[in-house]
Length: 439
Image: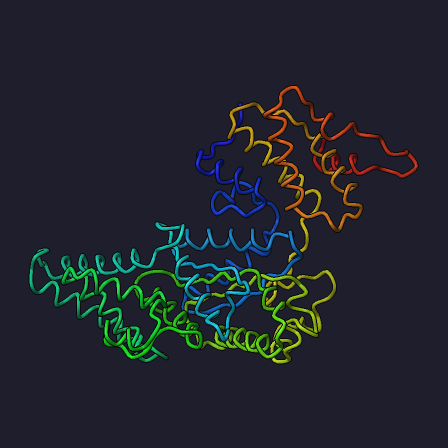
């Protein structure tokens, strides 16, 4: 019998996502291999953020090296630890700064993906506000002995909302942020759905003009391309004030900034990234974590990458004593190596068992067959350094599906018989793998 105990919805998400070559949103803990030092370093950052600090990390690696996987698993860990998280992929339409609203588009994407432990798939904004108000109401009722219909209850709750909001007023744009929070409370208190929805639209950055915002809410500013990051800092402090550990932003596909052809526009985006870095490193932001994923080229290219912007290069470049092969996970860059063949083999074992559990059959592929599959993948690509987990996983899921749907086919018919290597080449790769796993 298959010893795994995984909920069906998770095996479904894992099988479907991995077959399509994308990172699953749930169930990652069942297929995680390697990356322990990287995860532990980021968890330490999260501890600091929970204490009121901030963190900035660039996660770099070649395509298929596992950047998105690492960002996603950290996202899930964060929600389990009661952080609010938000994620967005950069694209030509979503940047940090732009002349056509690309920065605001990134803010809107982050806000639409705002997630918590109880709302892990995004859209958590209104749930967070409702939970906050309900917790204030319950606290007042317990402390003061008020009934749910007491007139004093609403007055006391309003005072506490303004107490939290007043802390925001000392920050850039904090006054308007606090005013919109109060508008949401008034909409809640008066059962005015239109006022509540206008408040949520403003907080999501959906008002197009200041005139529209002034008419609906009495505030003379809107969230736009220039100021959206300031509001992310406000959100971080607000999440801490209402009982969460902080706010973590996961921004992937940083290579899209590298691809910007206009040098002035590219430098403007790098300047915004520098602002984020300085704010988190110098204590200008609280309870905020920013994690950016990108390729080594995006960071290290001296002509168009982050290292082309001297202020960033001087802050990100490795120190004198960071020798070759000695990863320093406390620095601003976490550079991911490709998973080793041994780690990929462990991953294939996990996928074999999950696939069998999901479709209700007894896993049949042996360890030797998994190793043979790995050898064929290496030989097909012609160079070991080109072997990425993404490519191997997609091919392996395809193999498992085919074997399951066509019982008349065998592993050897699909992959081919293994041809022993000449004895003079020394211990072959199969023996090396088998020795690694005591087979």
